Image 1 (cartoon, rainbow, N blue to C red):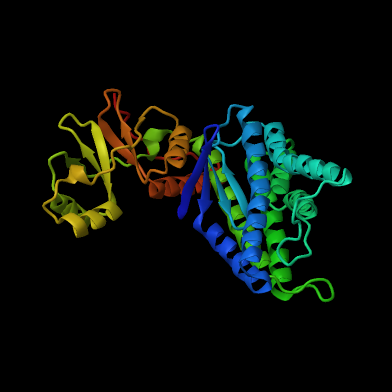
Image 2 (spheres, rainbow, N blue to C red; image 1 turned 45 degrees about the horizontal axis):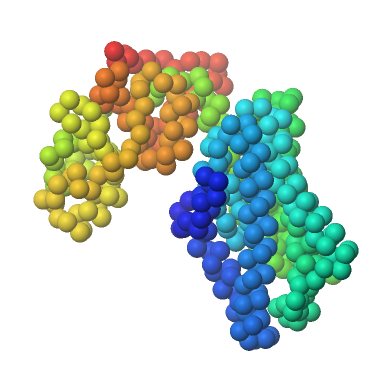
Length: 378
């Protein structure tokens, strides 16, 4: 995720923090400082950090449940509104998604249960007057974990409750349809949260800017998830050789940045594959990389000094769904398609994926198949 940095790596999962999370810590520290000086500010930071430790454990609950079904979690990112565990792929069966979705809240139930037992046995924290002087740390963490369970089980997709709803719907409906319904329910809750955050509830709660932010996140995430699932559903009926770009320009290894500039101006390409004489791909130069390199090195600089070398390739005969997943996992702006000898024969980009999905969606509604075909490389 952009604007995030690595904090640690735990059992193969990269834990990342979004920079806006640091702004959240600063906000609470500054809010507490007038009430008790530096000790109160440090207490506020410590309390928020412990709250997000509970959030992190929640996300690890999802990750380990997914791992039981062979689904890896490359990273977990902490955001001001919670955590985000990025699964390598979606679960294949509704029951799997149901268990993975419930695993996170279950962790918070266990934490709350442990805190409740500890408080019942008279446990306390030395100097337990935190923040404003009247907050008990263990009681606060108990309340936070209870709220995390209740909030996450609201059926507002893509939160855990929304994923539970989708899993239950998917036992009776096609997955894409179940996702669309769950997304609409999530958008409804986002609208409710937004209205409450904007106007408040007379006699119950005041206006809340954070609730507006959460509503915006839920609405956008629900829309994106629904679109991604519909796209994945459509890719199963498309061959990779039908979708790849075959009219493109490549650059040789000895090319200069000036050569790339000429192609950028004369063509509509934004990504240029760098190939050996035998047609094997050695890297990719994007428009952004080219502009940055031009500013720092000039147009006579060798292109190999600025190309992206770690670019995955995919054979032309692979399923289109596999290419779609590979692009998601690698975050690559372009995916070179190669023949059986590893020579470049085509490109897959997000733009042509979107165009293919749009066309196939329209044709599918009319019960038609695409009229075009391409000659497969040998």
